[in-house]
Image (cartoon, rainbow, N blue to C red; front, side, top):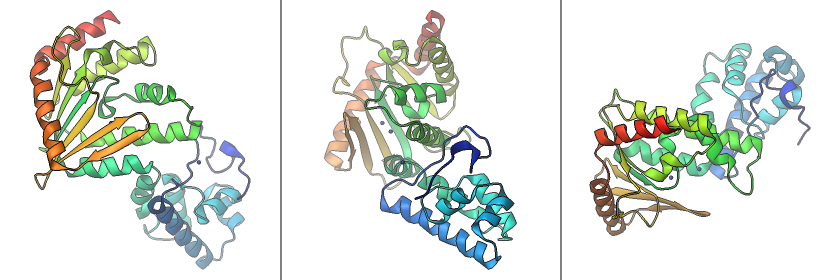
Length: 294
């Protein structure tokens, strides 16, 4: 459970925002989507008889930014697409591409995991390293990505944080599925990732999420002699077609476990881990105690 032409930065193409621009991911799917969007914008612009500089002025973006978007070298932001739709009189056809563009800007690994999560009716997670990504606050996630060596560029770090936050939309208490089960090793609650205040906010967030009707949150105390999860963190997804899929991340390796025999081993192991952990109500009390100690 995780960038031709010059660029003048925030003054051009971002209207003073301090958010970085995104370049397409290197995989073919992402690059293909962004290239197709760029071609469509160019066709609409030419049909209106606008040059790149004229179009840029009309939507508040620099000529270089327009060139990069049309050439598929820069991922357009939602506001870029909204303004382009209005100026080019596209009747919502350009703005409608925002969802496709949003998906394409995330790293391929994140998009693949998000697709699996969308197919899940149950999702279980055990982690003894950090808080599960679906439970992380933005500040905590940024701190986790910030510890990576070699360092991510600022742009890549922000892209990964944005992608992680977007994935959390799947935890919707108004829906019956999926249902979530998280088992956190006590070490993840004690490790002050990002510092004291970041950790306090993270623990407070855990208390909020742990009260949702479709979420079971459990803590496995360090004092327990038995721990079936010593081999490390993993996730287990039960899909709509009744198949199980495991997700395993270790140093430099991300693996989807689709073999049903291996997935069944993870399912058995996860059941034991849940039995070894505190019950959900006891776990929330444990987290409250940890919060009081920060």
